[in-house]
Image (cartoon, rainbow, N blue to C red; front, side):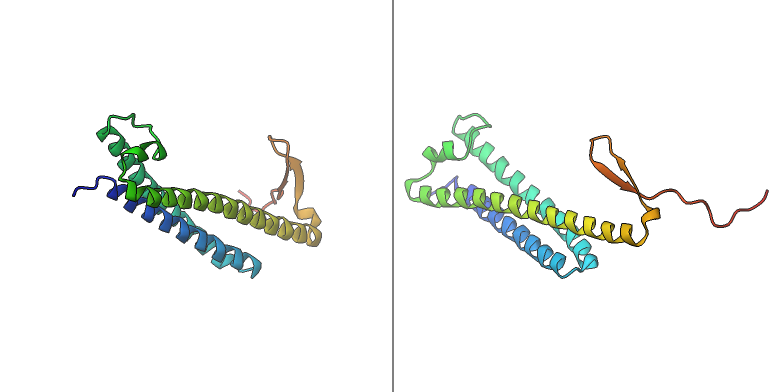
Length: 165
């Protein structure tokens, strides 16, 4: 028996797995932030970006399959997966409900972890800037950025060697 909904279920499983990998990378990044290992945090930032790219492709594949499934059932390409469940076999509906719920939960967890790590990294940078400002107060200038926030800059230094010419 042909089950046209199976490819969608497979892409949902794949997408959930990719979100799980991204959450794992965020967790690793948080550990490295607390360990104060900036080199590895930077390396992990590249791995996170690569994983986001993989996740974007997985999401695009799932969305394409959902659009194709919708078109095959005479629905608009913008139809949500939940609205298309009426054309899924009754025995598969619980699977789809669980996968949709899991993906949505993972999306919220990724957003929360991303915001937390962003705040931690921002706090770490502010802390290091404050230490440097206390060690060398004349090396920094505080101004207002166009958005109204304080911006810390380093003044331009005069060259230490000048040539006559």
